[in-house]
Image (cartoon, rainbow, N blue to C red; front, side):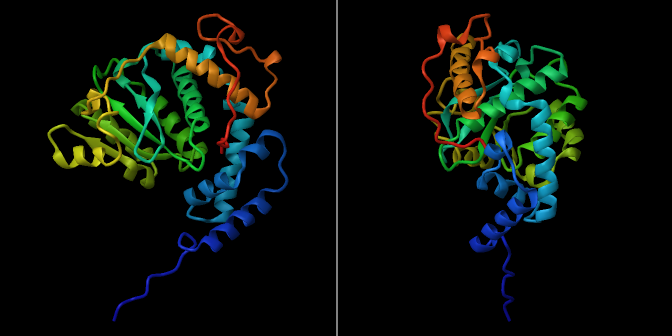
Length: 294
């Protein structure tokens, strides 16, 4: 006799919608940026991260709202973190994956600073930027990690890694679709084993190691990316060239969009280009934003 598959909240759209309404009622009235942050899509991500347990999702979301009110990630501007990005160790790709998701490219071998706090702030800025640039209806992003030049000297500390993992898992739940780690050296594999302990099992499943000589791992990567877009550093035919000046111009333009979306008064919040210039000199009029930053 075949056993009938158990019906869960994940399978039933009406159950999911009911859970979203229940969570919204549980967190109570919101105002300002908290209200803008807590879209229905946002609440679904927190519920998904806590296996649709409303009480646990509520606790998680409240911790995020508290963190956002103090850390203020939406107020970070490129000119504040541009020095961290001079080598292109983390940047937003100029292409999307096959699902149309925003792609972040990470190159740990290009590490250029030693401040754990500044490294985290730079990454948080780019996470917020990636979210702001998600297409309408998209909630997740993809990561590509290139290990060219990686060594112990370029690796961030275990503590910084732990802090980054905490922020990602606690305050950006269900934002990561998949992360491809391309041809990591043995030394990184040992580092990953040390940090994997802090990763949620669901996140671990999203981390894929890709080796050029392993056909299955290469084919998996090709299932997510157009080979013509994929840079040669990741086995594709595209070109990965980071131009800090050009990227800075793009980020300054996005800073204007971010300020407009969150209702931040730019008169009291200077936005620069990372080179000491005012945004008024380099940024065009902001384009309409369709995607909610949830």
